[in-house]
Image (cartoon, rainbow, N blue to C red; front, side, top):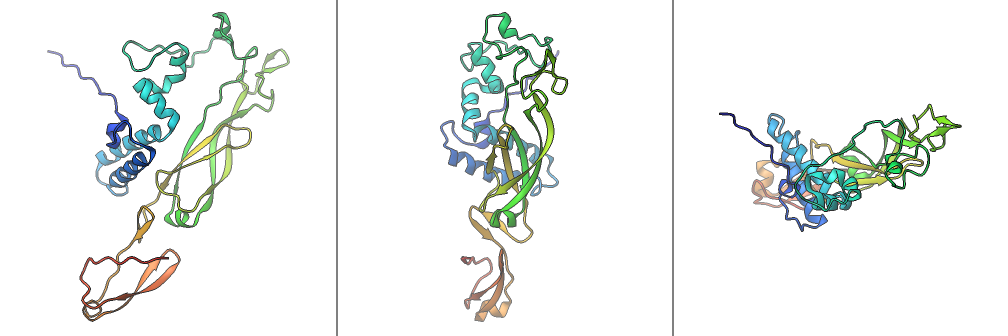
Length: 275
């Protein structure tokens, strides 16, 4: 007997534990909770946690963006091919097979022209620009104070040799191969705003390039744990200070401040401080 198993497609809403009509705030809240729970730094010996963290992150990338979420709701697992399916008259989630031309080279011939389509506008055309995405991990200090980061990306920009036409005189541009776009590493200075949290996105549009989306993760801190806009830390209080009252120094992001400990303070008691 031969048993065949089929991998069930990933349901992004189920992955985050939110309903299909969840709003942006609910999705972000669910992601932050699950990202903290399954982050590899928190579960260094649990391989399953790392895999779950990746799946949670993938679900958040899709559902937190209004365009990709709309494509996912309409086409399900085929959401990455949404534009092509719309062009081919695809009506959304359905059965059947999906065929794609992939990256096959047809010798510079525009198949749209052959079948009565509008083509790409010229003999070889300008490649459709796609948005870029990268990740950056920042410290809690950077999240608190804001900072600037140099980020190097490998992105497509208009070919300088043919100025995006794809041709050089009467032949294909040798620099970009006729695509009208060239790919090269580029370093950008990106501003990290104050109050940035794990799961936040920063969108920038570098000159001459497509939109860049930066997904932010915040590195685990050795002293503080962040919960929404609060910082949590533990301090030790001597037995006498807890019994009779006293004063202890509490670390903050800007230095140490004094905290008055009331008499009769019990272990585990929480104090809220501003600053």
